[in-house]
Structures are given as C-alpha cells and as structure tokens.
Image 1 (cartoon, rainbow, N blue to C red):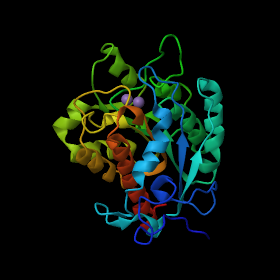
Image 2 (image 1 turned 120 degrees about the vertical axis):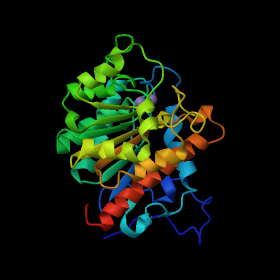
Image 3 (image 1 turned 45 degrees about the vertical axis):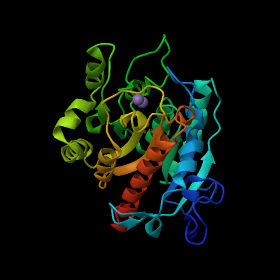
Image 4 (image 1 turned 90 degrees about the vertical axis):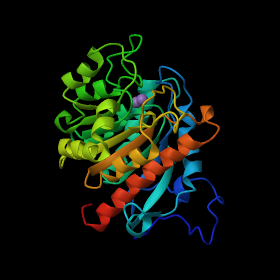
Length: 317
Ligand code: MN
Ligand code: MN
C-alpha cells in the first residue's frame, strides 16, 4: 500500500517545487488513494466574464501555502488520508457536449473506485457532467450547493447547457436526490420571483443569504445536516458564495455574501456529511491580481479534506 502525501515543509520550503495541489505527488492513479485532485479547465459555458480555465492552476499555486494540520478540526490530513494530484482532464474549449463526454468519462474511474474526486473548475457548467458520473455509480446523490446563484435557470439564449443551468438539467436527468438537497447563499438581483420558486418547484431546499445571515452559521449547519441526513452527497462550491470583498476573482459577483470565517464554519460543520465528491468552481484568477480568491478556494478545499480525514479516523469512510 503506497501512501501519497506532500513533502515535509520543514525539509522542503513550501514555495519550492512544481505547483501541484498542496505539493501532492502528480500521479494518475485511483489505487491506494482516498482522494484525487482533478482540474477541469472548461470555461466556455459561462454567461458573463470568463477565465475560469485558469482556476486550477491558480488554486494549485495558492494551495502550496497550506499546512497539513487543521487546527479547527484538530487533525493532520495526511496522517489519515492518501491523496494525489491527478492533473487536469482534457476538455474541448467551446464545445460543451464533447467536454461533458470527456468529463463524465474522465471522472467515472474515481467513483467506481470510491476515490473522492476533488475537482478544481472551470465554470459551473462542468458540475452536470460530474453528477452524471457520480449518479452512474451511486444513483441520485444529495446536492449541497454553495453559491450566490441558483443555477437552475432553464436556458440562456435558448441554450440548455451553460453555467446557469446545470442543476435544472441534473434534476431533469434524475441525477439529484432532491429531497436531500439544498442550495445555500442565494442572493443578488433576480430575473423575477419565479427564479427561486423554480428551484423549489424542482424539489430543492433554498437557504437564501438573507436567511443564513439572520439565523447564523450554527443554525445554517443544522439546516444543511437536517436536509442531507445520511444520503450520499456531492458538494458543489461556487466561489461567489463568498463575499466579493474577499473573493473578487469571479465572473458574476453578488454583494452581501459571507466572509472567510463564516465560510470555514459552515464547511467544518459538514463533518458528518457522507461525501462522495466535490468541486470548487468559478475562480477567475485573471481579474484578481491579489490572488486572494484562489487562496480562499484552497482553504475551503483544505477544510473539506480535514473533514474527510476526520471521517477516515472515525472509521466512517
Ligand atoms: Mn454557480
Ligand atoms: Mn454563482
């Protein structure tokens, strides 16, 4: 049994070496690993600013600052987890149907081997293909969706496959266990009241940003856990859930979001979530020279990995 982990930062400075996620070994394997980081640099499904094709590279670079121990969850990630950076899947820019086929095929081996894929996007359109791959192995999965947007619109300019429509398609295709699914952080201007109603009509629970601010993060965690229960869950994290003051590098910003502390509190609250896969999407490093958006993304993923480590330690996975 091989164990894959980052090199020691006390022997090799964190700024040294090739920039894989947390400096994990770049190995294309699904054997002897609990999770694999996979980049999907597809960004031509977006309806406004693009540039998320450079998200995986930026998140990897930012992630090398992360240390192995989570103080909040009191666990060393790599004491319990073996993980690799699998590199990127090949996609076909500008051709979403072909890219969907490539993504679904590319991710299927991870779900078959019950290795948790940690996907670095890319725009949010890619999640539909990820859910196809997940549902192919597990059947419909609970969706835990952090975003300022619903992404359940029916079409953009008559097109059914965009980054604004993946979850409506996923519901139509039966990929989502809607009774255990929730969208968290929804805010900003809408096309009309039918937007949120549209998600609720699909059977999804919607926890708006207003309500989450009002009830607080601890209650928010309870709402998420009540909804998801013991269902197998897929976590889809759009970085625009975070307030644009802290994550400005994304294409469709909405004010009134959540800060880093609040976001971390929510992620740490998912420690009992039965997670089969995740993605983190919509990081556009080209419009954030500070790099803080990618760093926020790396931290969110780090905390999810800490959750996985805790579950492994407790024998829950
Ligand atoms: Mn989104
Ligand atoms: Mn969004």
